[in-house]
Length: 280
Image 1 (cartoon, rainbow, N blue to C red):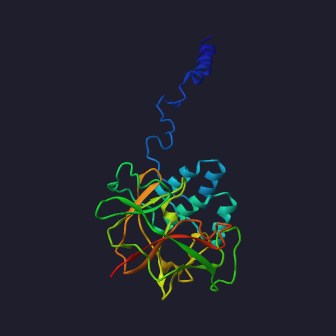
Image 2 (cartoon, one colour):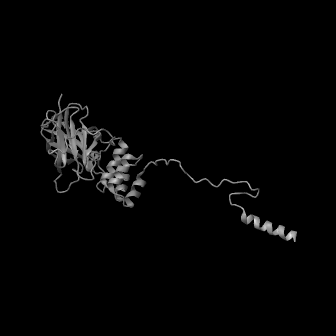
Image 3 (cartoon, rainbow, N blue to C red):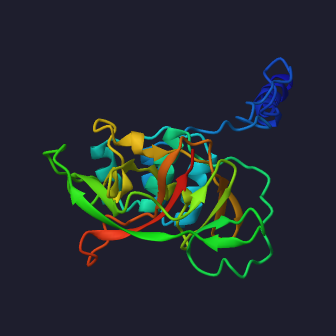
């Protein structure tokens, strides 16, 4: 009888033990929950991450903002740009990736003193602020004609990079004179970022001004074209409005080229550019 009771006790004991105890009755520590309370490290974004976000149907503005604010390392060679385009990545997002790689992403700064709301800034375009009255005025627009150059013999498709283009503007100088510290405002179409506007220095000739770029406003580092572009950092001052101060530029002729000029169809290889000069 005692043997039966002892055997029954042995059979019952394992069933009544807590799973957190061993056979000696010592309390065991359960497996720790992974990453509980530990801050998550921000992963470096790549081309694949951007393409996955596009495939998932995330809004273009959200993806572009993520590119500008999160760590990223992007492959932006010709084949990489074509792969991005074929994956449905928009020009706005690609431009943000290029700007991130070049370090031209805008930093958070104090907004400039923008008149609320200015009656002069009533349409998409580029403006400058008068020093005397502090009013915004439209920057003069000139016609730019694009001609294919002979520096690149091969052509890549999909509208990303093609032959280099030379932009020509009639006349040797602009009507507007600015100086370092003057303020420029860009009023962009919805979904367009200020990095897509190019600040260019002209090569001045007797009867015209010239710069070199490529289709899609993508510069080619091997052609020497990058010397025609000047970096700037714009800050947001309103909805679709970005402003920056004229950098300490060398005397000469300059222009602000809106995005997409070279690729617009039906314009007979012509577009527009906002022009100004920096005096000696």
